[in-house]
Image 1 (cartoon, rainbow, N blue to C red):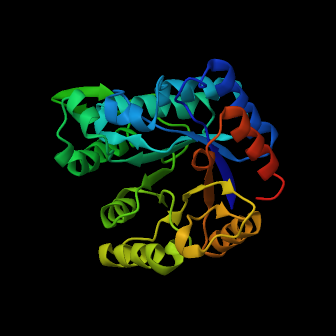
Image 2 (image 1 turned 30 degrees about the horizontal axis):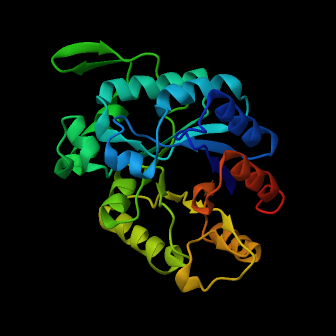
Amino acid sequence: MRIGVTVPNFGPEATVGSLRAWAALAEDAGYDFLMVGDHVAATADVTAAYPGPFWEPLTLLGYLAGVTRRVELGTTVLVVPYRDPLLTARSLAGIDRLSDGRLIVGVGIGWAREEFAALGLDPARRGALTDAHLETVLAHWADDVLPHAGHVVDTRPRPHRRPHPPVWVGGNGAPARSRAVRFGQAWHPLHPPAGWLRREGLPALRAAATAAGRPVPALAPRIALDPGDDHLPDDDRLTGQGHPDQIRADLDDLRGLGATHVLLDTARGGGGHEQQRALLTDAARWVG
């Protein structure tokens, strides 16, 4: 089971120096991958949760590909409807090439209604748009030359990884699980409650795969990393919250459930970037 970290690519502390420090931490502390979030139009609903400035993730991953050598690089999650699918396919393929095949493509449908409006998109259609765009992205990764909008398009360079970088579908609900079965190599649930994956999430994923007649995607959750001095009741905590013993037990449980990757998110615990990096440096000694 591979362990990764989120890189907070937003807020006043998200300077070039801080982002480089996060990348160095991931490499030096022995983490396996790092991931960044996505917003394009920083409307009020976005900045209420993620204060600016917000670094555009594909630009940032191209930069981080050049200052890292070992860790995989990904999105948690790229909001698929926000970008033209041909541009998305080419941008991601370029990052995968420039990083020698270290890209992980976490995708989602988005949630910020004002942001959708600012981009001229109907949020009610975000699921359908995501599916259509993913079909286009995957098609452009599969061939060197393809028809696109009535023209013949050279899609090269194609991704380094074949057939393409792993696609993780984010979201906890039934549509996300169905989309993971249809398009993804992994399901990427976000901040699941303690015990929920074993009780509900994974049985529902297996049922969706059976109904579709397709393989069950791998499990690659994003969990909180929010340790404290006290043991918390499981009914009141997220996976990754509570006493370090509880967090270690959560990771053991995820390993037993067959998780291939686990992404640690320090934002739930609060604190500035230096405090969060210190937490990850300390956690590297007991989460592996």
